[in-house]
Image (cartoon, rainbow, N blue to C red; front, side):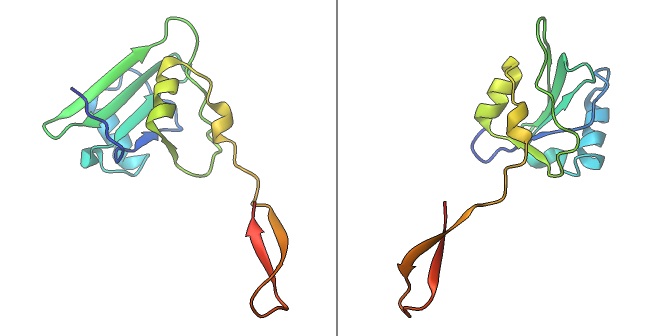
Length: 133
């Protein structure tokens, strides 16, 4: 049984992976490409170039677990390789991703925060208070 709790992070590799890769290759990619510890208990997701197959590597405390899925119809969501941050999914996002839902808009960077000047005076009376919307 795979137990993913709220502390388990789900990292997605932005680089396409050859689906012939097995434990050792995915272990190496986790360390070198994602720069994470494969024994951390987090889930690491690797997708092929055509986006019709993915493999997930997970350490359950006793050994490495490899989960494989090939889509019969449709494709896995495209991961933007130019997204400058690491791609970390929530459990809900991973469930949608694993079912083939489109998550492309999730990886677009949000616009900068919009600041609104609040006309309420601070205690000193002369300063304006800035609040985020």
